[in-house]
Length: 435
Image (cartoon, rainbow, N blue to C red; front, side):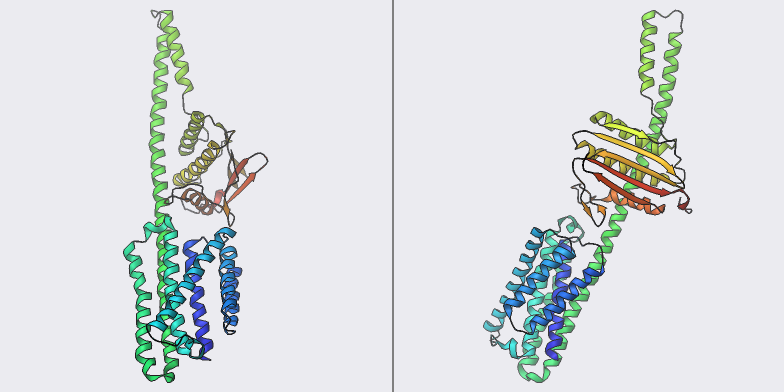
């Protein structure tokens, strides 16, 4: 009975190591019953094999479990799954060898004591798993570079104190209690070891939960700050363009006045007429009547003109008054930024913006030439930007605005013509005093 409990908790801790390693090294698929079922089945099979005392079979099950969790639980490619399986196997074998060597050479234990003595098995297993945990956990932290700035070295060093102190206490407890009293204290030694393992699991789980909450909060703040800055930028740009429109209008009036002066020479009148036409062509185009939408569209229309990208619009005079200025800015700016950026990498550069109404919905759609299909995980497009700090924030802003107006984000990639399309559907009556 004691042996079964010991094996169960040792394997629970081992799969907790898998969980924290992959959570930090890879990006998990969305939570599903199959994800948890995969862990449960792997744990049950590993527990059943343990009682056979067949090290080679145990190793095979370990390899299979780690590979399947990486491949199916986290959607890693085969090459990546093999790499992570190899890493964890090396850590596991290395720490077990280190503990066996320490037990026999330093503590003078029998090499096979773990087979007939439950307490020795529990202590040796717990020691090796704690070392395995430290190696795997901190290796995963090193690999995940784009979040490393959120975790300082002192914090990680402080975390390492928990398993290290557990190892020290476990050794002292084994030497002081079991070495003198013998077999009668085996249940208490096993219970103490289990408590130590559970304490480590709880401490690191709470830390990971707190860390992820902090990351989400930081990203949310960054997103809100980015949207605020964008809104302020377009407010200033709108004011500048309004002032410019007034200036151009007045200047054209002056040029027209010059043309009607009787005493002016024909050359002066001709020159004034040519200037008037040139400035008239540079007026800002009104697309929707919403100042933020028009400023954003004009900005990207000019950017496309400069880069040689064909830019088309079909706004159809749709009113966006049901949306806040911040949401209009976040949605249009991010949609057009992604579209123009993707089109700039294609051979035939083209961007089309459409805004139209259907019943009680407003659909904002962008089509752009796209050299290759976007990277997708769990039905959502992954950002191709290399900047880890701002990675995917624009896409999250688009989804946030869509969700705020009870809408949805739909996308298609037409491989035959290399065109990518994103449609954001918004419900006009769903603002519910959010503005």
